[in-house]
Structure formats: structure tokens, C-alpha cells
Length: 332
Picture: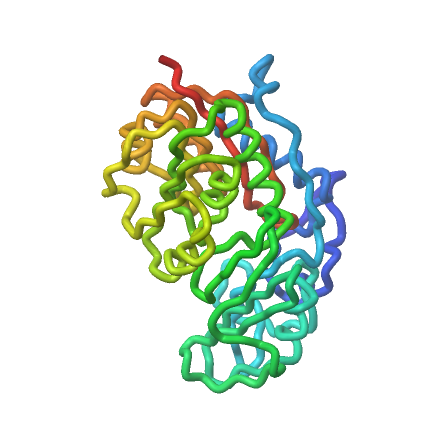
């Protein structure tokens, strides 16, 4: 409510929309270097790596551009204009710009009109130039440039082109996909020769694709039908099977490697049980929430997996969200 004594890490928010009430970037008042250090502290505490030699298992943070990176934006609509909500509020704040949105989307945020829609999903391919706008409800009449699609776009990331439907999950920046895919490939290469791998919560099939490209036989498991359709398109040339199923009730085949990229809720007990039943020698867990990371790391440890190392990737500058690639190996 009031700053009594400012931290040396406090800065003026670089985006003018913060002073107007936008709450989308909760940490803009913190210096970027301090943001990254605070996130490392959250991750280290969650993984029990805060003291002594254990800290060496937390590798250097992968740093990405802090502005103009976001290629997916969920905007609220008020009086036909797109905007963002106040922090911890449902009130919508129309904006005249956005520090973190990709320039292809800033135009849609500031100049598009969205009729009687309550929300609009905006998405672009930073490296293809494609973009889409999908209002809620779908029947709402919108006014956007003629190039804007409503169904899907394509993006170039991790060395390949990916089809991404409007409702499919895809990381919000292609350089983030590059970094995560590189971490997965590096960790997978450490247990060669390539064998059978599982890509759990596979989305549009990115990790299945990059693993299959280097010789792994991959089964990708995803529950969302839009993402499954995209994955089948994206993986059709690879040794990869796409299965539409709820991971927590799916019976896995015996495998050598598991890559899991669950939602913020994490794997939880049932997800870890599926991982364990696969018999995988190595598990690569991509976590985006410190609380679920703490729980999942403990569950994996109790199931016979030991953390070998973890790599933070700063996908979401100016927010408290963390992203970490944890590599766990069977300890028996």
C-alpha cells in the first residue's frame, strides 16, 4: 500500500501502462537482474538447492529479451477495445501499448475493435508474420486487418515450422521454445543411444518432434483435441505416435526417457505415478510454478528419482512466473 523504504532493486516501471492500472506485469517495479535472482531463489528453495555444494546443481539462468517477446495475449474487452485487467481485479484497463507484446500484436491491441466480445485471444508467429484473433464468443464481430486469421498460425522454433491452432497451447515466445528444446536435447543426449521416449502433456508436439529428429521413437500424449490435431500434422514425418488421452489415467509403455511439460498445476501424485510406471531412466520435467515444482520434485524423489541438475529459463520477464527444466535420474 505504501513504500516506506525503497529497496535498492526498486525501479520505475518501464511501461507507462502500469501507472494507468494495468496489472499484467506484476514485477515491472523490480530491476531485471534482481527479478532473475529472486526467481533463482524461488527455484533453489523449491528444489532444496539453497545451501552449500547443492547450489551447483542449479545451472545458470537462460536470459531472453525482456521486451516485445509475447506472441500470445489473452485480452479482456471493454467498450469494443482490448485491454488488460488491474492486478487482482476484474476491472479492465484499455491500453495504448504494451511493453512485452510482440509488435505484430500491439497493433491488434491498440487499433482492433472487438464488438460485443468479452475477451479476445491474440496470437502471432514472430518468425512467420502470421497472426490471429479469436473473440469470445466466436460470433462476435471484430474489426482487424485482413491478414488476421481466426483458425491457426504457424511459427518457426527449434529449427522447424509448427502449426498452432487458436485454442492449442504453445509457449509464448519462439526463442523460449528454442531454449527449452535445446535443454531437452542436451539432457536426452546424455543417456544415448536413443531409445523410446514419452512426451507427456505434449501440446502441439514440439518436444516429441525435436526428439524424433535425433533418433528417438516417441509417443506424445495430450488431452486437448485441438493440440492433438496440430501434433499429428506437425509430427507426420517422424517416428512419433500421438495419443489423445488424460495423462493421469493413461498406461505408459516401458520407456527410456520421459519429457513432461504439465500446466501450472504440475504432475501431482497421479502424473508422477504414470512417469514411474514407464520405468524411464531419466525424466525431464518442465515446471512453470515454484509451488508445484516443490511438490513434484519431492514426489519424484520418493519414487526413486534424484535431481541431477536444473536450468532456469526466464521466459516471462517482468512477472513472478518461473520456468525451469529439471533433469531427474533413477537412483536405483
